Length: 474
Image (cartoon, rainbow, N blue to C red; front, side):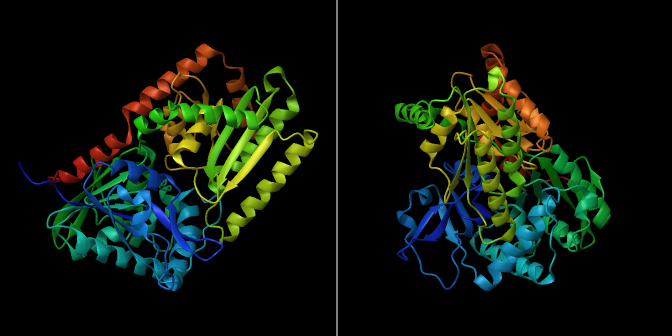
């Protein structure tokens, strides 16, 4: 029997990040985000090395990561970045340029040459570390927009390894992507991979169109033809929608302490007839402000279905040093105050800001407590919250309101799908979910659960790695 292929996973962040408490002590906490959630679950039963950053700069101390339970899943190799490089790389190019560009330019991207230079430098560090740790003929799986140059850099250093790249965010339309001053370099970086994966078929189409528009490359049956050193190399491009660890969430939802905590959550909110829940990172792409406006309009109607309705929004703080994110929080706080004042001071809308993600059992308790889950981003690569909620509905009850512009909508079409930019449509979707009888809820949720269970995180990981392991015949 052949030996297993060594696997190196390269992602910008590790599943834990460094934090300093009020006393100056350093410790690690779980990192937020769908990428970390997906990779942690996918690698739980695999022999792998995860290369990434824990947010520690060269001038900070070291905390004992081995004492943190999140590091037990696989081996980790931390990259420590100089703050003078990390800031223009992450807060500059990644946050101010790529993130808005890849989310339909809801906020105007800011392009600075110095930021891109730092981006190149960081990508070189990650590529060099991967080259040093990968076994002969092994696999290297690179993740997301922060590291798009790594595949080509790694190929130059280690032509013997198989290289995969997966983009967790959406990929923009080619005419929008072309506005990026370094669009050619980013595409050439990604095309250093043997296999490139995206969340949706729409993202695949956008990428293939961009390679033709910006690089004049042709594609054949889901492959991009790259000419290197007078020879042809084919890069496979495909759709690999990310899943979740469905059994983990279902098992947690059945735990007596979680069921008890869910009842307690509802009790703390005054035992509302209907509880609407939303859980997001605090980010302008998540559409938090739009759903709050829609909820405020719902309350003004005072119909029979709308009485006794409470909404809770959990918002995990992120990128707090970025101006755009501080503005988002300020706008949301004004909306919350205005909404509750309009209801005579009744606390029908609660927004809780969290310094770190909810732990698993508290998160699942929120899902179990929720009669209606709202996942309505302006734009999103997949959004695993929608799938996690579905996995916890053990009795096929509850309702999912889902943005048409989340990647999950391509799979979860039995949800109430909505354009989040249309406030009236958002309000109408809430009214429809509130009015739905038990048979309709069960019909929809049964279809959603079948989809989530049939396309879990292990299937996603296996499909991608199987594709990467298979040589491409030209």
